[in-house]
Amino acid sequence: MGFLDHLSELCEFHRGTSRRKLSKLRRNQLETVEIRVKMDCEGCERRVRKSVEGMRGVTKVEVEPKKHKLTVIGYVDPDKVLRRVRHRTGKKAEFWPYVPYDLVDHPYVRGVYDKKAPAGYVRNVYDNPQASNLARASSTEVNYITAFSDENPQACMIM
Image (tube, rainbow, N blue to C red):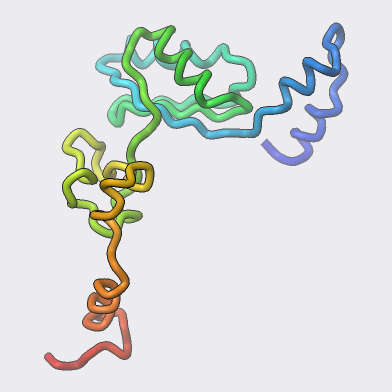
């Protein structure tokens, strides 16, 4: 959705809609909401997709059943999307708790590594202050690692 599309939506004339309602509709920013919902079959996938497709402000819905991931893009409130998925499907749903393991300094530390996470993902340690101390590398540790790195041209040549 480009700038001109957004501009044309703002300038549209809606019959029977007051300015107050229009401003309330436009208050939400364009958001990408990622939700983790367990999906076992195609029926579950269809039910999860249908639960959010009819919401006001939703522009795109992506379902990845192998990752148990639902991605909703649009002018929506993330909490409302989560509540609607829980209510309409009857399934346990939570915001996507994973990040790619490349973003975490120590992806295999206790509290970060999750067996149930999709391949290439670990728990988001930046939301959990207890696990984040274990997963972040200290400055001295980074200095030692880069001193003996092959990518560093000024690295130590002891070998």
